[in-house]
Image 1 (cartoon, rainbow, N blue to C red):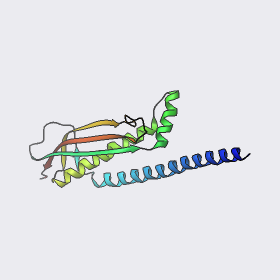
Image 2: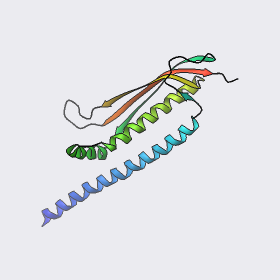
Image 3: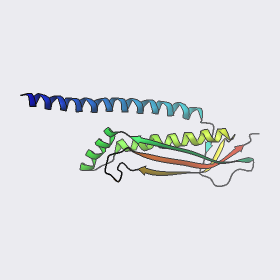
Image 4: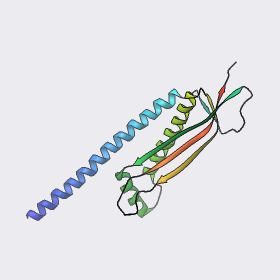
Length: 158
């Protein structure tokens, strides 16, 4: 009977830790999404285009970059592992990549404002995944890195 009670306690602790991780992970993600929306509204006046050639009135400010690495929590990793069994879109990773891309773009815009740019051309995004296992087979963190870069210009308004 004591072994059964010990087993129930161990399972309860694991379940409790999973729910705590899920709760705080969701809370942090929601706070980050709110922060992104606020910061994006403040940066709406900076144009980001995939054009290669600037308008005649544009003054070159230089290369601007925005880079972010966002870690994946264990709950999302666990859910993605379950989803791999059945196939389909890994929606937990879609939100991770979306948040990372938006954050990298915001950092790109913030860098442009530091060099007095209000137009960014030839914008590119590079994505890489940070592996979750090392050579000694201990689990380590995993995440996604996104690098956004482009050429900043200051467009004079008449």
